[in-house]
Image (tube, rainbow, N blue to C red):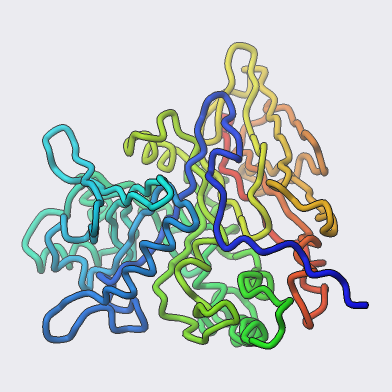
Length: 446
């Protein structure tokens, strides 16, 4: 007889709170790098009516629904200057229905909240993605509309200063296409260490990642089989996910030079890459599917305060989690010192008697009928000599003394064997791959 079907797939995500609140810090699931219809290439390249300028409301509705279904807590929009720079700042929040504005002390709008049907709320902020990616802007950069375009399109320290003057946290997207000297010159707050679009795009795969150009498209096409009821379309990420090695190398190189730089995963969703409809009735690159795959988990002092979220993102008190493989419960990386505990993004001294302690996570509500995944963590120390693995193991805890200068970061990998039953006729080989599950941000010893 055929094997029993696996447990029903969850198209949504649980509240971020299930991940745990180490030392009272509240996990907030976020998307950093996200396009709305105010990016010229969103929505299959036709995000706005050519005559009236009206946005594609169906595409926008997909984005808004996806943010609710995947229980995103903060969504850092990053629209291209074409057409984001042309609009009044308040327009860019794309508020609809009963959305509410978030204002600063002077009454200026700096965010908005989407109120989902289930009571969840999503904080929406405005940013731009051009050569540099300022996120969480408080207002447009200064100047005329043309001067705005020029600033958003610039790739200079002066532009970085202009973005910070506009309240932004400054990020670099598509790090796979950057050089380390460029990052040193720009001094961003953070960079992308994983980029979904880079993993998908044939040109970027071939030119920057050293991967077969058509590999991702070919792999996802296998999930377009609408006749295989056991093949779960959301699991398509497993067929092409690869570490963005050049981006990780750039990160380690700037960390080795003593820079403090946070790392994030860039979703880069536009609904413009994979218009093929999969068995669940959604396109391959639906906003919901891409937001379901991974997020940036900020650990915040006050989940209701946008400034607290931005502070956690800027300082790197966050980790990237690929929740396709399961929502991680209990992940924690902390420096336990004689008199205090330091978090990711913090700095301690080599003489402070600190130990880096890591709690290896488990999967939220993993069904016991599924094959067991294999989870392993490792601690890397990055110093002038480059990265060195200083600890590795399945846990439940790992530890290493923080008695040598460097940046210490944690990676957790997973062999997602529990996804094998969702691969249908493709067999279980993909579920035997070892893939990234978590990238933690550094704790600095100096």
